[in-house]
Every structure is written in C-alpha cells, then in structure tokens.
Image (cartoon, rainbow, N blue to C red; front, side):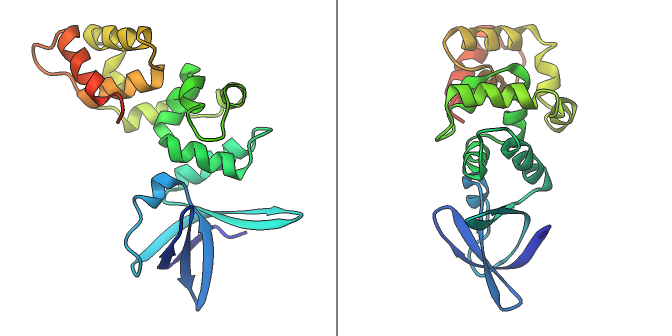
Length: 199
C-alpha cells in the first residue's frame, strides 16, 4: 500500500522514527542497524516501507534499502515469526550475514537475535534456504567471500574458529574482515580473526 516514504526525520525513538511529510508525521518502526545509520533529526530521509495490518493494529515498517525490505517480507512469511521478530533478526544480522547463516545452516547466529530461539532459527533456515540469493551475496562481498573458499589458509582459519565454538557465519565474517596479507600463516590470520570476531 505504501511503497516508500520520503520526508524530514522529525524524531528518533527507541525502535521507531517519525518522518514528517505533507504536514503529517508518520511513525515508522526500523531495525536497530538502520537506526544507527540514519541522519540527524531535521534532515531528509527516505525509507522503503511495509504496511502491516492486523485486526487490532496497523504498523508501518521502514528500511534504508529495498533489499532489507524484501528480506523482512520473507522472514515474516515464516510461520511463527512476526514483524517484531523480523526487525530483531535484521537488527542483529546484515542482509549478507543473514543469507550466509541461512545457506550454511547456522541457526546459532540467527538465534542470537533477541526473542528468536534455536527452533525458530532452524525453521527460518528450512523455509528460506531456497529463496535467498547466495550469488548476489557473493558478488556484493567479492573482495572477500569468493576467495575464502579457494584459499587454504582462510579455509583453515574458518575451520579452526568453528572448532572453537564460533558459528560459521561469525567465522566467515571475521576472516573476511581480517583480509589476507602477504606471508600470512593460519596462525597469524587466526590471531587477527579472533580480534575481529565480535565485529
């Protein structure tokens, strides 16, 4: 019904923003990850929106990218996950991290989202595995992702991190963020990856 909203960012609250356009202030719920990237109040903002209607409520959800909006629609299409759970997942995981978690079956990474348990995460993986575009993710992260599978040292470090108890998504992201420097051994890369594991 409402594809997007463009206007002045009038206010920021804990989980939603007020966007003023045409003399009307619209309350829009946004993921925490987008909240942190929004401009200061008083500036123009454009959000891709999803209008959620139930018998007892109507809410507007907004995202900085169409990609996030489409992922949100896929997530809330999974039985047992509502808009609140969808926002929680997208607050905890970037679109690429979510794709990687689904494709690799990393329920642990998804279950770190507030209010999302392991069973729900496993159900999400089962229902979305064939719907998410892994190729698009690899293209968008081509500087790191495509090379990781083909490079022995990086593969060894990902394996080592998973053996230490980290999820595959966390390990993949940490290795990607660490980069591969000339002369790197598995040990030197592992040390850098451990420093990046929380980022």
